[in-house]
Length: 358
Ligand SMILES: *Cc1c(COP(=O)(O)O)cnc(C)c1O
Image (cartoon, rainbow, N blue to C red; front, side, top):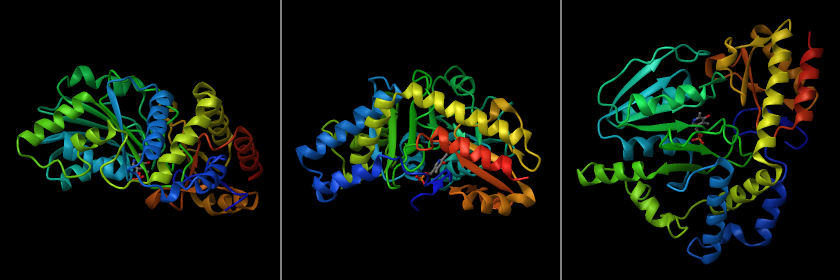
């Protein structure tokens, strides 16, 4: 709704430039543009190059488009695992990745900790082909420290390291020498309408998918990695893609680049700091994630117990829509997305209004 700030993690607040980009898209005929045209190839290249520049992605990585991050969960298992994957599970989203691996008939192992916690134990497992990490567990507001992610290359030199960063990008800067695949969908940190997933993979992933194919293992049909690569080399896609979504992604990334990724990162940290501070001193709510080094900068979860409904109503009356707690925590927690679409002023207002609720 117009005039309401949407703090739900996803779909989240639309970035303020998107409405104009959509209008221009209609003017330019993008919604009915054929994807087998030079014009589409330019749009695809703009988005792809933008993703690489914004996230600092090295040249041996490729950027592919899918329908969603959920699709990438499945495709990554299908294309990168013959037998065995290892999953770090600390909430609903990391758990879903693990479950999909099992549904795909793989031997999925999990290392699980309770909601709201990071991982302290990391025992060795044999024959792991893929380590599946959820950088930002959207259901609980726990983020993995970079040092945690970066240890797996040495621990499992033969495995591929997969990072789901759906609810943290574009904020985090990953070390691309330590990971092999990274993915997100656009309705969270990129402030766009839903319906587009972005899958970033290196040549090790391509080689693994070809190895599975040569062994006679099914890696799917149109969205398998060799097919995606073959088309992406020509700035093309195997199927009729979300052309409007790809167009908008390129445009919004252009806006992010002009604003500067360092500015976006600094502002993200500022907004997170003032909200965590407000929650820490509040009489009725507190940060759900107790250990500060496990706390997400981009999805901030408040333990609000019996005050949940009243706080939601108080904030709504001032034009601020808090995100519900996830799943069974719906009545006892609130979630606040901290994405580039959420301004410093909006966060200052949020903190003020929380302070008034006592
Ligand atoms: C939202 C989310 C997904 C799923 O994204 P879709 O675009 O709905 O498929 C996956 N992982 C995480 C961490 C998420 O927050």
